Length: 168
Image (cartoon, rainbow, N blue to C red; front, side):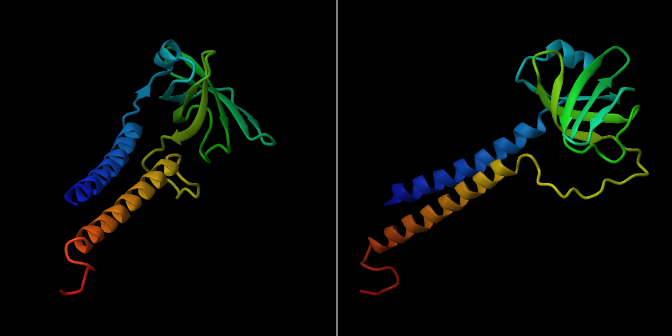
């Protein structure tokens, strides 16, 4: 009977460990410069690039496709982003772009983060964060583990003297 409680506890610890790992994994993605990204970019690899928005920005409002280059003093990295650009997006602005290498020396972005002067404050975001699905699954796993621990403890108690909560 104790082994069931032990396994239920182990399942809870595993669920919490999984949640901690997935949160840590997203936080360890560091910034590259455009030159580093161009030199290291392998097709399918995910990374962040920090730099300035280049002078030529192409925005297609019908397909919601934004094409631009992230530049620094030594290199330029082409970026394709699908979605509406941030309000203060424009040439010369500091930007952090997160996405996946396209295998041709460019980046397919899934997130744009504008670096704003301190006099601006970021508006609340109305969209769901990109990692929400993983946390949702981790929450389900944690709830399932707690439920199993309750069932196991009830069976352990019930197995010791008939029904739980009754006196012999």
